[in-house]
Amino acid sequence: MIPIEPETTSHAVLLTGRQWIGLGLPVLAAALLVPPLWERIETFEPGPDYRLPYALSNDYWLYGRWARKAEGIPIVGDSVVWGQYVTPAKTLSHFLNERAGGPRFANLGLDGAHPAALAGLLEHYGGGLSGRTVVLHANPLWLTSPRADLQEAGETRLNHPVLLPQFRPRIPACREAFSVRLGRVIERSLPIFGWMRHLQAAYFGGQDLPSWTLDHPGENPLGAITLRLPPPDDRLRHEPIPWAARGIARQDYPWVDPDRSLQWASFRRVVDLLERRGSRLFVLVGPFNEHLLTEASLARYRTVRQGIEAWLRQRKIPFEAPPALPSGLYADASHPLAAGYEALASRLAGHDFFRQEISPPGRANRP
Image (cartoon, rainbow, N blue to C red; front, top):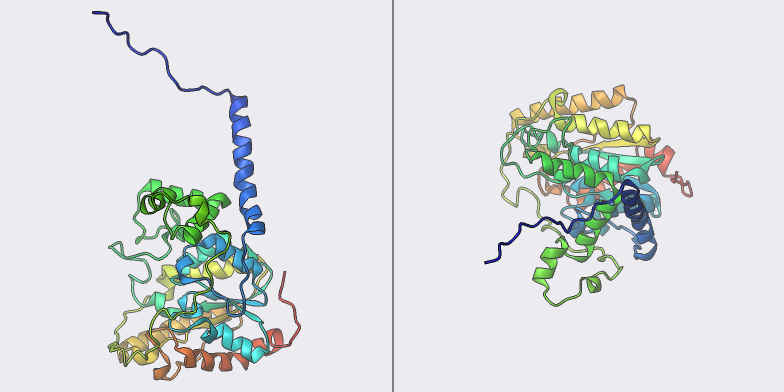
């Protein structure tokens, strides 16, 4: 028997430093050039009352593109701005546009964008808001409890975990492995990864390519990339039923002191970021559904709201903290129904800031 000699060679190719540079430069060029070139070939024509389709809520690259493209004054916030219980033609931005006599406001709401996620969204994808007048919504919902404030390390379902601070400040509710958090930091830092997430969300149903090919055997993945984004979704996400008729009981929320709140610290970071970028801010606080609270919880909430208002006054930021809408105009703790948005728009239209800085027709709001 002839002995078999052990393998002494390798199929690996060793590259010199110059070869690594020659390989890396084209890859880096593609990573930097593909996303902006893609915007030139992909059709994106948002019309009146456009809001990011719910199915694309994790498409932060498209959100950044919408922020750059949106005309007028962006209204930035979570699902209260987006309009969880209304169609696009019944949102706050729509009713403000009615009073302004034209498309002066743009819906930059993102479903589930609590302040910690919103800070990451605007830091990495919100450059299009720089130097503009921005209406920023502050939703007290995220201070209702330590869990909503991300202070509990349990099995809390996190909205938009990619956007959260991954290392500092520490978020107790964010417990993923180091490698996962590091990957998120890299994804946010390189535009090519945001673009890849965009392709998954817009053309592959949110799936990565291997998963999509398993579910679509025999189909060509390139055929799924139509270069036309999903049309705006005019369907209701939830039935527009008042909270009491939905059987929601009164809530005894414990509330978190703003001075010890992670979410409120994140909201302040949003304000700092936008002001550093030259944005002029107007903050809308709530209005929270006070009718849903027990007497004890309502007293605690009013203390929280006073703290928020005091900080805004200290920073000399114009704001409106309107009283609660009539009970029947809320669908839950924080989301108005269509008539609620209309009533809120009427109140805002009479504010000095809106009259002096926003209402006059023909005034540009571009950097």
